[in-house]
Every structure is written in C-alpha cells, then in structure tokens.
Amino acid sequence: MAVTGELTEQFAHAVLPVTTSEEYSRQEFVKSLKFHLASTVSLGIKAAFQVRAQPQFKQAKGREPETYREVQHAMAGEPYYQFWSALQRNSQEMMWKSAQVPVERQLPSLIDAFKNASGSKGSLTLDPDLEVPRYHRLVDIHCMPGGYHTEFAEEDIANGAVYDRAVYVYVMGRMGPLNSDIGDSTANFVKARFPDLKPRRILDMGCGVGHSTLSYVDAYPDAEVYGIDVGAPMLRYAHARAESLGKPVHYSQQNAEKMNFPDGYFDLIVSHILVHETSHVAIRNIMRETNRLLSPGGVVAHTETPPYRQLEPFDAFMLDWDTRNNNEPFWGASHEIVPADMAEETGFEGAKAFEGLQPSAYESADAQRTKVFQGGDFGGGGAWYIWGVQK
Amino acid sequence: MSLQQGAKGERPRYFADPGIDKVLSMTMALAGEVAVMRDRLDSLERLLESGQPVSRAALDAYAPDDAARAERDHWRAGFLDIVLRTVHQEREALERRLNAQSYAAVIEDVEATTA
Image (cartoon, rainbow over all chains, first blue to last red):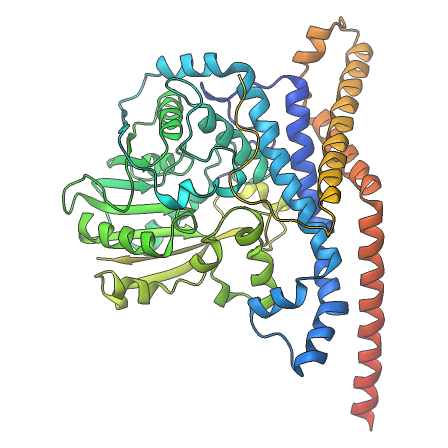
C-alpha cells in the first residue's frame, strides 16, 4: 500500500493543538532550520572529515578509521562538526518549545476534548501504580521536557499533544499527515513477508500517541488492535486521537518488559522506534515477554533506522549523533543488535529471525528526503529497518 | 500554565566557553522570531492586497494557502543562507580544499598509471 496525500499539513483530529498564525510560523521556522541543516550544512561535515580529521587520524595511526567509533574519535575536536552539532541541538530544543507554547495556551480545552472522546469502540486502561522504567526516569528522551510520563495537570494530555505536533515538525512532514509512515511501512513489510499471517490480535508496544498503531487497524481490519505505553499523557491523547479518527484501539498503561496479557494472546507484536528507547536489559526482557505472548507462528517485528554494520563508518557516525547529543542513551547500542543472536538469547529460534529494509510507504514526501540516515534528519532516509523473529 | 522548560539530562557543551553555547541559542531563537515577524508582515500584505479587513484578530487567524506557504518556505531558505553565512563560507572552503585534494589525487593516479 503506497500512501500519498497532503504534504504540507498535519491532519486536524479532535485533540491536535490549534496554532495561532505566530505559533504556526515559529514551528515552520524550526522545520526550515532542520531541513537546512540536514540538506546543506551537514554536507560540510563529510568535507571536514576528509580534509582535516581523516588525514590527521591516518598520520597518527598509519591507517584509515575503520569503525564509527574511530570516526567519532577522529571528529571529536572538529570545529565544523561541533558547530553543526550545536545548531542541531538548538533546533531540537526550539522544536519542543515551539510545540509547547500552543499547548500551554489551550491545555484545559485539550483535556476537555479528551474527556469527550468517543465515537469508536476503543478503550483506555491506566495504571497509576505503574513504575516508570529507570531508562525513562534518568533523562528526558530526545530532549522532550518531562518525557512521556510527566503529568502537569489532572488527567493530563499535555506531552501527548506536544509530542504529536513536534514529531510532525521533527520529520518535516515526511511521515504523512498522521505521522504514520513507520506503521504503514512496517505493515507493508509484514504483509509481504508473512502473507499467510492472519492476526486475530495485534499489539503495538511503546505506542506513544498511536502514530503507528492505527496503521494496523487499516492493514488488518479483522484484527483487534492493542497499544501499550508507560506514559499516561501519551495514552490519554492516543485514545482521544483514535476515537476522533474512528479507529478502535485498546490502549493500556503497561511496561513491555512485563505485561498482563495471557500467554499466546497475540499473533503479531510490533514496535516502532521503541527499541532504541529501552536498555540492554530491557530489550531482552521485552523479547522474552513477546515470546510468551505470541501464539505459535506469531511474529514480532521492530522498526528502527538501519544497524551500523550496514553503513559505512562515517555514515554510522552521523546516525549515531543522537546517542550523545539528543538524550538517546541506548541509541548506539541498539543499532548494534544482531537479530538472530537476540532471538537465540531470548528463547526464540535464531534461524527464524529476519531483518530487512522497507521503503517508506508515504511517497508524497519523496522529493523532501535526503536519502541519508543521519542525526537530525529522521524520516529522511526513505526506508526503515525492520527486524524480528517468528515464533 | 507552564510546561517544563528544559529536558532532564546533562546538556552537551559545544564550545570551550559555555557562554558561547548560550549566545548561539539566543541567536537562533532570535532568528526564529525574525521569521515569525516576517510571516506576520507577509500576512498583513496579503490581506491588504486581497482587500480583506485588517485587524489583529484577522492576522492571528490568517492561514496561508499552499502557494503562500511555498513562498514562505523559499524565503526562509534564503534567510537561513544569510544568517548562517559564516557556516556556509567554511563549508565552501572545505569543499574547495577537498576538490583540490581530489584533483591532486587524480594527477597522482594518472601519472602512476602512465608510468
């Protein structure tokens, strides 16, 4: 399923924050700045590497840098790279601010819209006693102030609203009017690879506000779709958003490392940009838990950007920017996961593991993509890396 | 109401003097606010040109159509070229050196092959 359609506007569902013309202009500036950095300024980094850092490394070691960590070492003091990094970090901070301002202005009405959400057959189950995992408490992931879990008001949806709009700005609209490119692309991948899979129940782990979850309601109309996340503001917002769009989803507040569903409950379990926001221990717990929850023949699939072993050392270095600069502490390590090894380690058969690159489903954005996987250019690669295993 | 201002987690320092990090953040925020003001001026001009009533409320509610959005995208790209001139100058200098290096390598290569 190729997805086309509106390239310049996010779809205005019932809980999308309304922007005044100034608030909109501020977000548009961030979008332009991010595109400018990704498409023009970042080109100088490779030149700086080739002209300055690479020859210096070669002189010192008598050979070329062979790994992304060696490129990182060579580039540590490179002034052009440092300045680009500083601009990139600022674009990220300005993005959150530009998404926060409209939410601060209209939060009570957004919460009212959440309370009035109805129209579909979905549900919302929150667990106020759920312990937010350590890897989300230590830092605010991707610099979003307050992360997924912090609540600023009663029945708060603030950071769900901030996240929904900021993601649209972050990817410069290239994931479509519903930010659904990762889910749509993953559903295409699963359908092509497992044509006989007819899932009765589908689980989306770390669903956030449901950007990718809703893709499965459309891709598998006969299936029941479930979404879990640790952040209550995300889930309240996800529920209201799904209801407004008429897509039934059962959202609940759970940690993917230990869920309350019965054994064998799901035929398809997916995650989208979840893995890099967990930890070394957590991803193994999550894989063991999916093994318990999958029916025989069921499939778990995770979508991310490509692993470093598939990239040239310099390109992997550019993709690794987020690890140290964007509060994504597990980003680098998660890009070194080997699916078959992970499968073996967590109770699956390594031979049933898979990985592949899936072209972006949202074709309208193609002209706006750099076709490079690099920090600060999310959704610009034109493809997603999907790995997993069949039980 | 006010949401949390900064992200939890130590912010990287990009410059030897931490004051430079702050000044760069302020400079980029100001560039953003210039673009916001320029859009407002553009909205005002477009309302006037189309003969529609002009008021602060009309400006707050103004939503550019596809053509106006494309023109603003184009303006911002040019604006960023101007604001980031010093960065682009360094990039071009690096690219020139890279091309010179590459050409030197071509000569070396050709001479080696013909030898």
